[in-house]
Length: 107
Image (cartoon, rainbow, N blue to C red):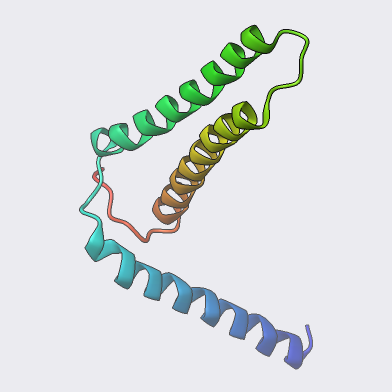
């Protein structure tokens, strides 16, 4: 391995360590140590949003039959999807923070 490549890899490792250190120092104090029970309300919120979105889709199909949904109906469905997707993204960010050691978890 060439010296320049070693320097490049070393810099990338240092950047990764700095990112990990900063994220842990900033994120960990604002969220208390987590246990599985602490995650239940967040996971339930996502499940409720998913259920609302899917229910609306099925309800919409039952109402419109073979017609195209109205713009208002699509807007409502879109709002529910956006809500669900945003909550899923939040849970993914939480999972990532746990995996990367930014948050303390009870063993």
